[in-house]
Picture 1 (tube, helix red, strand yellow):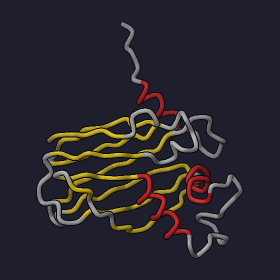
Picture 2 (tube, one colour; picture 1 turned 90 degrees about the vertical axis):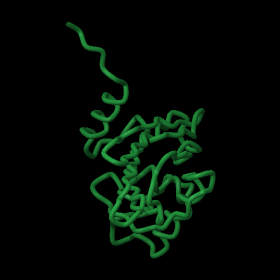
Picture 3 (spheres, helix red, strand yellow; picture 1 turned 180 degrees about the vertical axis):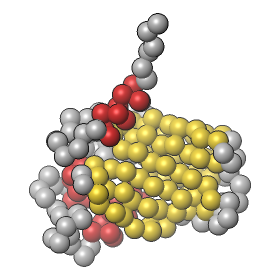
Picture 4 (cartoon, helix red, strand yellow; picture 1 turned 120 degrees about the vertical axis):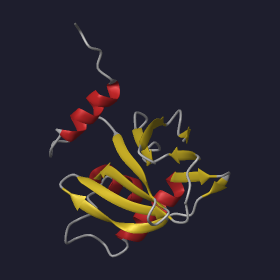
Length: 166
């Protein structure tokens, strides 16, 4: 029996095994977890570091994220880029994002953001333009975990917005 493979699974597998080699595909992962203990949405983004540097600086020159050469303004540039390219709408209102920080690991950067005061999540609308201005083939995968249920979106340059109902 031949099983059809999901493009999402193949794309994710390729990204996970990519190691240090230059990548020829453009994908980011975003995971949004509802924390009932704090009534917050905890957002984790995983982005190729070189793509993120290009996004925040507009240049493909080495910027130094995660190295001793990282400029002191790096976190503020990253958060500004997120504010301009990522939006969450809850109950018809744009949610305020709080930047928690980042970690650079090998060739990817983990970014942590939070939305406070979300006791219940019924519907969430997400717009993710991250890196789509740079790469036409950019795919932004968003998974939302709420009340032991996970729903996902594939957002692209042609379809940067999607909504989920719980």
